Length: 413
Ligand code: IPM
Ligand code: MN
Image (cartoon, rainbow, N blue to C red; front, side, top):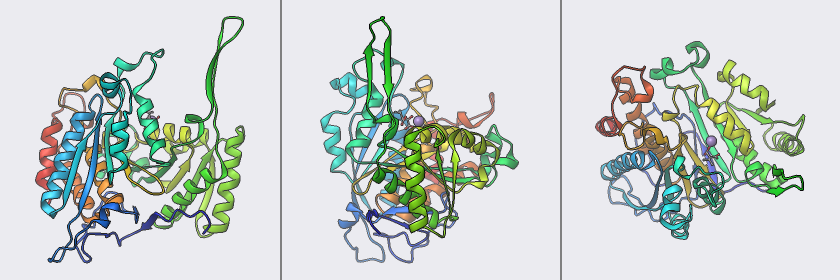
């Protein structure tokens, strides 16, 4: 297949690169279908043990960042360390700075040392960046620039955001149970092109006004690779792909529409493919979320739609994401931001970051069983009625960041 991304392989249930064949993978995983990188550098260093199962060495870079980032990363690390001990793996953790804290320390939201560490790692787990301290619109740089730069530096063009409702949390959603029950959408947001990276500028006009512009630019191959990746995921799920654009107005969207239609017709004829305009999608996500399977869209539209979709499961605090390229380490992070209002109070929900750590084990290290074990543990904790502040009604009891993680650790088998 011309231009096919060989580094990515999609599968339903043959997940092991390093893990032993025949392991009992817990069936009740949260994200039922998986995509994994067969380019697994850690797997290359996977020494076969004499027993019936292999252990693995992996370099994991932690980028705590700002706000609640350090708190949730600390808890995800505890979970990864428990997995490491339980399964006999060797994870080498190193922490580096990104975002506002990096600006404070070095003047640069993505210092060279951080880039170098990420490039030689097997996977990266990021907390969050940004906060009011660095919000001055006239500042030389911003924390968010660090995030954008690392995506570009590592070629992470695909941002996977699974939107899955948790049975236990259906009533925490602002939407009615009958609408959201059974929602299972996998978003593929293009991450290194479009409005975020096109030519932009600010100029002074003779009349004293300022004029600013940002441009949405895409090339054929940028659209092809993300559509192919999304379509491959659809093949392993429910065989449906929805492409979202604004082709009635935007030239860049018309390119998306033509390229995507060609790829789907020529390479994925078995997939039910449809296109939806982004304004209409904003509405359909709320009125018929269960009718979507895989959704692929551009950078800006994906940014907005995934925040909207994150309300379907009830809380941003539960949603992980993976950013992947054609090869090299993937970057994993919770979808929520740095939540400066609750930073340092010990009440942040660490579950999205813990679930992001599970995605890291699955996609970058090929450790399906270990990933599923974490996801099942999170489900058990919710089923037992444990909640963080974001998941309860005002006035109800809740657990703090550390306490809910203690329950996750106890539920790991
Ligand atoms: C996200 C965030 C980032 C984005 C910001 C922090 C630059 O909102 O990951 O969705 O817009 O991509
Ligand atoms: Mn966003």
